[in-house]
Image 1 (tube, rainbow, N blue to C red):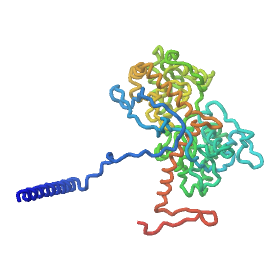
Image 2 (cartoon, rainbow, N blue to C red):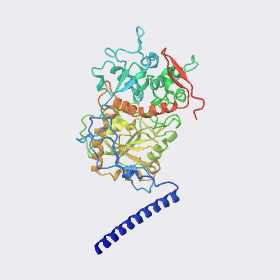
Image 3 (cartoon, rainbow, N blue to C red):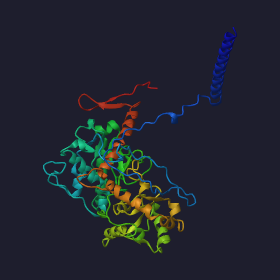
Image 4 (cartoon, helix red, strand yellow):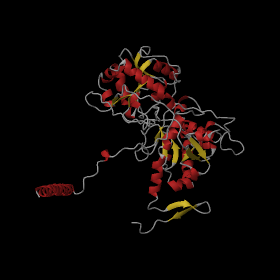
Length: 497
């Protein structure tokens, strides 16, 4: 009898405890609702994370545990180390897949523009109604000198044309397709930088320069094409690498993807890092093959040779000249193309540990890529600079970044550079030799060079482009292919709200 009473009491106690717990839980939940107006959101940090699959393969890159200097904040001279980030998906043998071949080639439809827009600017004379040269027998050369630094349009066009005669097109990063409906993006083969460099001056007998005439003709042609009308131009690739190229057409072709050197002369609504692609300059100095130099053999600490007095954001060059000109192991001098200026600058970079890249008329310059080709650690003083492939490439592993406001303080820059040890410099120097191939233009293109890296940068824009195109069709009249091969418009419903 006593055992039954004891068991009954235990059950009642347990039930009371359970009931009390439920009541307290409900009361606490009601308190959250009353105090916040909605249930406490789920903390996503407790959920398992999943890496997105990468599309890059076959290029190894050693992770750097050494120097990661980037003077990003004006904080009284203290250096802040930026947080480490993943640059790509590592496969089982440790390879960093930040470049190399994509799984599926980027499908590009290229307009057969009249040769006056591309190779005709190189004095190529088409015969028999041909639009393109026969690359099995002739490749029109690109002019040298400063023209070369903005020759991106030339190398990308060559690569697309080569894809049509490739022995193994599936191994390519990008390939040309003849049907625009199969394409991921639409390529506009206008050599705009060359047009500006060679034909921007107006002759006395001309009402407009040839460069302006070509831009106007291009806008008229593009906006009349069904491909442009269907996407509003959002999936079109327009090359304007020279800062002054496409000055007239850019305001009408702004929905397209621009391939640029920087955004220095563009309003934010016309060009920006979310929509467009930054491509490297073609370096002017020769590549440093078989580099056997080291920290001790490069006896110049800091090197700069170029224009010192610049407009716009280039005031820092003049300030730094007066701060550094008397430092015994610093070379800071005026330079130009005259008297083998490029060759002399290349020799100076090869003998220097660090090379200054200071903003001039625009945030970027070819000097950065000359320094990379010379394995001279770049010191970047340009607050508004945008860099190629920076979504997958960590420049702080081989560059020094200094805010302009800090750099022009007396002794700040020189003390910073002198504080970098031999071991730290050597790590960055080794990294420069690893990444230099990513900035090389050549024909035919090679695995992981600048041509392929630009195509990959464009490929990463495709999902965003498709989303913008689809969203733009929600409530507006849709333009779709008609049965006769033309276009027809489907009006939006009157009561779409």
